[in-house]
Amino acid sequence: MAFCVLLALWPAGSLLAQGDDFGLWLSAGVKKRVLPGLDATVEGEFRTRDGLGSVDRWSLAAGAAYRVCPYLKVDAGYTFIDSNREGGVTGGGNNYYNDYWSARHRVTASLTGRYVWNRVEFSLRERYQYTHRAATSVHKYSASSGAQKKSDKEVAAKSTSVLRSRLEVQWDIRKSPFSPYASCELYHNLSGGRSLAKTRWTVGTEYKINKRHGLDVFYRYQNRADDDEQDGHVVGAGYQFKF
Image (cartoon, rainbow, N blue to C red):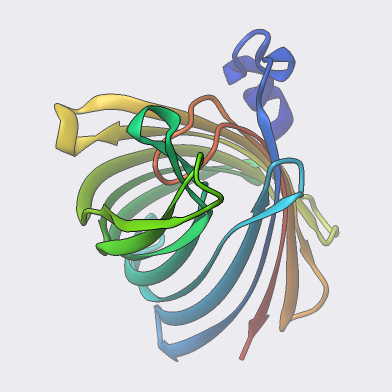
């Protein structure tokens, strides 16, 4: 069921797009029931890009979610991200700078509604995301004078606000540890007139090892690159421990 919905949403020819990146996303987290309906989570994530040839970023996130009723959940969280940014050239190609690390601080707040029909769960999540990129200095070198060091390149601080709207369908298979799902998520740039920044399609499955341990394996496609992520194909795997 979930896979059929994804195929209906999938853009024609996306898998054949030229020049798309490929990356691997790995994560591990813990989840703790604090109070009835209130859960706290901590998660670490590692990403690659350039066909697994380069580290893209690592991050550490903490958050909390509260189920108001069986059909509505609210959550909020904070994420620290350290991104490996690609180098480039300046001064008409006379100078260059190497890859560098850039720190980001991200705050999110979400509202998720869900509806279950015949063991199929439909959910719609609206998430506000604010990201602040810290200013940094990058070493710059002359391309024509034997890599002579030049004055540093200054990367200015930047803040962005995004509204993420995700529609997801998940199938709870009777007497099976697998729960396949599919989703489509739209990113609207609130800092730029609510324009559509990118679209993300995901298909995957959760796997319940036992009451405490679970896995999530997925494939994802993003149709557009931005300051946060490359466009292209992603294979991901996540582990979660509940206590």
